[in-house]
Image (cartoon, rainbow, N blue to C red):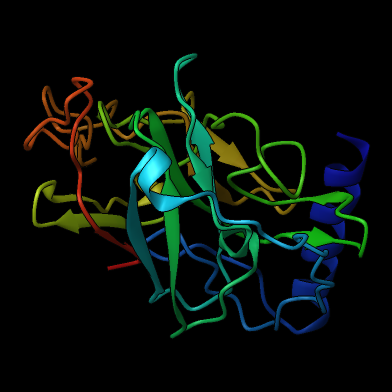
Length: 237
């Protein structure tokens, strides 16, 4: 918490120094005139892929169409999940970059989201302005963030636009305006600007992304879990 308070204050001071205030646009991305601070990319470690036949696998292609860097993240959402994801998933993605990682595992109890305004040192200590999970590598999905659970769909929070699509999963999109959140729902930065929402379902002008049955409801594997197939996840579609 102390780190994030200092980081948010630094972001605000940088915006003021550039003659502007960092503001999120309609997609939830930073739209200020200041460049992002220089970032250190922690070591994600050498990934040792398991035997594909032992767990099954599918690929997830991330594309960043935001105006700022996005740090993808994933987390298991169920106690039975044994998924393993290529550690390259944790590395930051500058605007316009696309990356494909492989997810190994037979139980699809997995959620994906994007983090913004991240600052880490070489050891992985630091934090993010939105999508924060307490570490460089996440153990759980955060609140106040556009999280897509493969089984349940969007979870209600919002920090940036997100689209998930795949042959077996279908197309699921959540694009809202953080400035349209209610005062009770809005998450503010040190400059007093809304950067995320507790929920995007609480205002007359908001888009309610969570819908019943909005997860990957295609064919099912032998263990009963959704057979999501390969996915494409687009930030700021």
